[in-house]
Length: 373
Image (cartoon, rainbow, N blue to C red; front, side, top):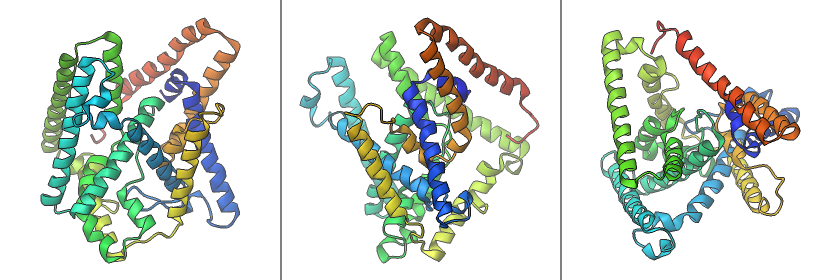
C-alpha cells in the first residue's frame, strides 16, 4: 500500500519522507560512533514525556512549521471578529469562514474552561497545553494530508516540552499540575494511528472539484461522523460484553490504563521522579526549529532543497517501518518520470493502484477472525 501511495504523491514529498529518515540514521551512527550511546535503542524516548534527539528534532521542526501555517491563515481563524480581512473571497465562502471562525473560537474557550473547572487542570496550563496541542495537530494534519502517511504516533506533546525546557522538578511545573491534562491528552491524542482531520481536508478538495452545495456537504459530513461514532461505540460495547473486556485488544482495553506503559503508571512515575531533561532535549528542539526555519525560508530561493515534511515525521516512530516502502515508490516514480512521459505515468498508475487494492483484498480475506479484536 505504501509503495502505491508513494508513487501517487508528488516526488518531492516522498523523497523528503525517506531522506530525513536516512539522515536520522546517519545522525544516530555518528552519535554512537562518538560514544554517546551503545546503539540506536539506547536513545530512549516515549510518547508521554521522554525525548531523544530524533523526536526532539522533529518536535522543534513541527512547532515552527505549524506556527507558520497558523500565522498565514490568521485572517481565517479570526474572520468572525475581523470580517473585512476576508472581503476578497466569494460571499458564500466568507459566510462559511465567519461561522467556522466563531465556532472555533467559542469551542476553544469552552474546552479550556471544561479542562479547568471539570478536570481540575490549572487554568494557565489548560491554556498553554491547548495551544501546544492545537499547533501540533495543525502541523500533523498538513503533513498527513500532503504525505499520504497511513498512520502515525506523535511522540511529542506539551509534557515533552515542559520536561525538556524547564523540567518537572519545580514548584510551578510539578507533575500534579499535568496529571488531569495527561488523561485528557492520552485518551484523545496519544495512540491515534489514523486521523480524521486529513480526511476532512481531502473532502473539502472533493467538494470544491465537484462544486457541491456547501450546507448539504457539511451536514452530510457531520451526520457521517456521528453515525460512525455511534456504530463504533455500540460495536465495542457489544463485543466487550460478548467476549469480556479482558479478551479484547490488550492495549486498548487493559494495558493503556493499568499496564506498565499505561497512563496511570506513567503519572505515578512522574509524581515520584519529577523528571528533568537528561538528553539535551532543549538543544535538539532548538536544532529542529532552526532547521525547519531555514528550510522554509531558503526553499523560496533554492528550489532543490528537500520538502520539510520528512523533518516533521521524525516525531513518528512508525516511519522506521514505512521508509523503505516509500523509497521504493519514489524510485519507481522517478524512473517512470525520467524515462517515460505523461502517458507512461498515467498507464503505470493502474499498477500501483492495484498494489493498494490487492493488499486490502488480501487483508480482508486473510484476516484471522479468531484473534483478539
